[in-house]
Length: 369
Ligand code: SF4
Image 1: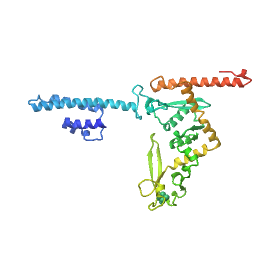
Image 2: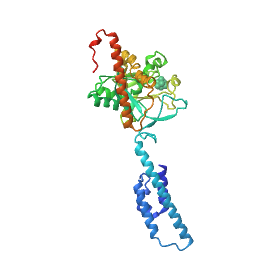
Image 3: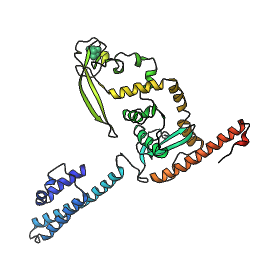
Image 4: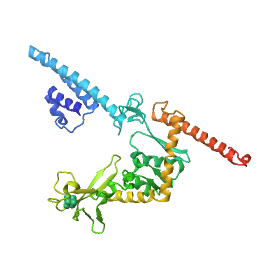
């Protein structure tokens, strides 16, 4: 943006005629492109050549200045082309590595310097069952939330169906992920943030001022605050998430908070009345997830999650020492990990067969295809 502003000012200084001809120069919203600037530069050069030779000192000085300005414009044009190239590679990311343009800078779990150093990498997602890798995916975004839907879609591409059940940690518990799983018949055992806090009978659960603990009258659509006052619906807000999903939240406001003896415990903002924002759809999904996660099957899945993908990651990174990709570029890294995943599954299968042989008396009947 700063470069575009510099170009805009420079063009106005160089030649008023060009500035008038290109009304876009005045329009601060116009984005200059390198090709547009190249045309302007050649136009300016041509006009400078057509000027009769300077006769006095003043004219010579003016010509020198104009030539210098055109040179500056040329360097700005080159810079703009370079920035555009960077932006094209960047896409929706906010960083990329010069040695591997497909890799994005991320915080790594291993941080030997202890300074939160960012390193170029890929967000690797794996799906496992009985510690066998069923699928994997490499993503540019460092947060897990945005990887669930593309990962489920890649599973569908591979197996021509979605998994029947999906177990994941709270990093994946967003409205769009719950919705996706719901619409595609995947039973979601996915935690959301504060799930663990909710499960503990501590201050969080018993705090009557928490929005989650306020009474809601579904029929008449109002909340009741701890003082017994109705909080009426005041409006709806739509917002777009990072992935482009449009979520909706409803605002409720207390009628009057002045003079309330609970004011200091109720809310800390400077506004006169307490306002809360509720995403009803997400609330419903969370309720469903809570019921599933606290059911018998949910307990089993939750217990198993730490010995499923986490154990596989542990084996990959610490037992087998596979901590870095050995190639550059997403395609090559995908190939790198695909070979590793195949070898990992074969190793696992051999270990299982070996264990089975030891326990199975009829092991002679076992055939390895
Ligand atoms: S401060 Fe307002 S919202 Fe909070 S308890 Fe008092 S009246 Fe209710």
